[in-house]
Length: 168
Image 1 (cartoon, rainbow, N blue to C red):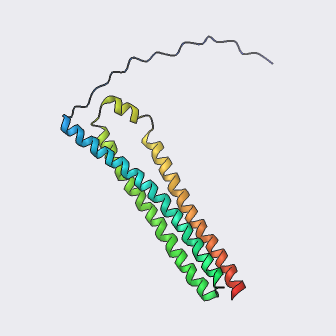
Image 2: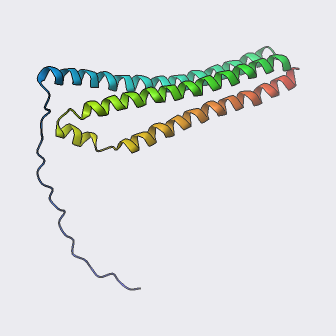
Image 3: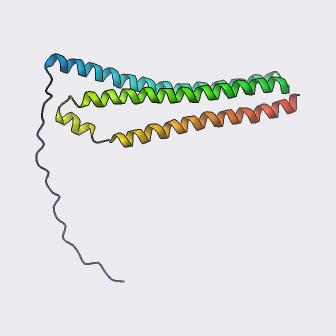
């Protein structure tokens, strides 16, 4: 087994000192942009929270439908009505999750636009996470949430079919 020749480690290149360029906005405009920026970031947190609560409450509703069907020993007719409700709810929730995603996209566009008016340090820090990476995270979570809702509907369907078979 041949050994690799040792290479000299070069010291890491020293970056030039960072020079911060302040925002060109006057104080009042800067305060307005900061207020709008804060509102947009709070809206993003609100919408993300709303997405997860929507998924969670949908799954709880699915559980409730299965529980009620089992409790009353549902026949095939009631099970079919519950399944229609489940499909309608699942479709509506997935559509709502997509609308939430558009809402977040619009807030991100506002944040990006406001960020252009801030200092160079602010821009430098915001550039650490690329918008492409952020979009990948958001859309991956959207797909995950949609799949969870669809799988929940499938579980309801299987449970209702079994309940109707036993109870009907």
